[in-house]
Length: 157
Image 1 (tube, helix red, strand yellow):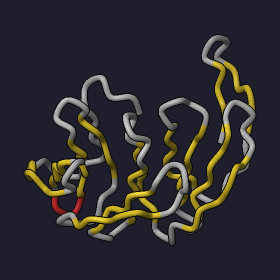
Image 2 (cartoon, helix red, strand yellow):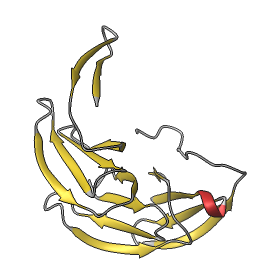
Image 3 (cartoon, one colour):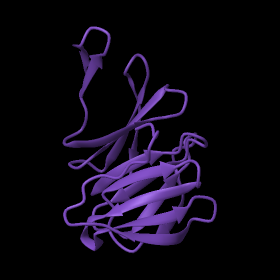
């Protein structure tokens, strides 16, 4: 993983990860970076700004995406072809809950205004809209072929 200095447009550091890093997310204070991998059952947690590995969490093989709720620091994790989203506590880093969605999820986004989690399901060509508080599906949005990513205007990746 390469860290880019945006002021100078140069590579500032390179950090080793497990095989096939797929997605990374910062916690709300910017002091932790969570990275999931396609080639490892581990989620790496890096401390920032020193980029040291704080811990490795076994999340199982097949991690597809991760999203950190910027308000609560709850970590949402989806696995390829698994119609279940897993919820991890940011402090203990243990799974505290899960909930079902209509299909495997490849990307997650959070709509702060509506307090919903948007789960992109490529095989279903749809986005599941999930109420974060109740963890229940509130709608399905059909979309076109080969969806890749979903985001909400003003969302921080």
